Every structure is written in C-alpha cells, then in structure tokens.
Length: 135
Image (cartoon, rainbow, N blue to C red; front, side, top):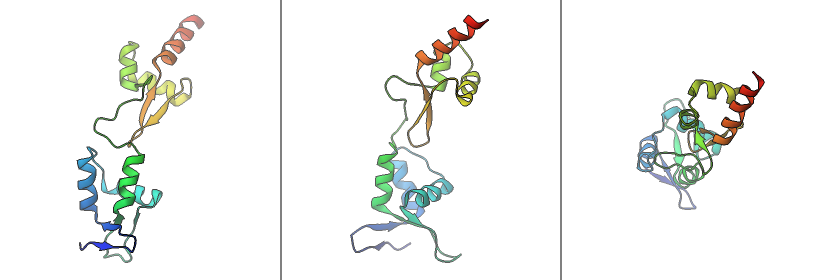
C-alpha cells in the first residue's frame, strides 16, 4: 500500500506496518483488535468501499501504544500481583480467586494493553481469613 501523508506530516499505515510496529514494542495484536482500537481511540478508519483497506494514523497509533503501556512482559503495578501469582502465594486455586473477583468480593484492577487483572495479596489474605472466621 502506498504511504499517504496528511498536511500535518502524519502518515497513514496499513495493517502490516502497524503489526510490525507493535511487534517491535513486544506486543502481538490481532487484526480485529487493531480495528476495534482504531475505531474506539480514533487512530484509524475503515475502508471507503468493500475493496479498500483500513488505514491507520502513525502518530495516533504510537500515542495509543504509549498510553496503553505496551511493553514486553506486562507486569502488575507495585503492590499488586496478577491473579495467578496471588493464587500461588495464597495457596489456592486461580479459578477460585477469579470467582471472588468476578463476584466483587475482592477489589481488582486491570492494567496494560490486554488488561492484566491484578489484586493486592493483602486483600486476598484478609478475605480468606474472613471466610475461615465465619465457619
């Protein structure tokens, strides 16, 4: 696809180039996720006809990657653990911990490009103790 440019100097890229940029940042993106994000965050546009191709703004895509915290090996913020790590440290099943989070019994937070679900270990331990005390 030929590169088009706008008056402000921004370039339009095709999906191949966008996925290459993402791969360099250590992130693998599916075509459907890139299309969703492009429409949701305004850095791309669908084809003008059914034979056309999606186009993406280079500056907009870089800004989106930066804002979403795209980095190799997404990790939990300080004070938080991923669900699997918290379950291992609390000696319990990750599925049980997911269930508690879905029910709203333990506060959680999503971080990073793919929304890594994180919890505080202290919240998990406190809830476990409360369950044991109730029995």
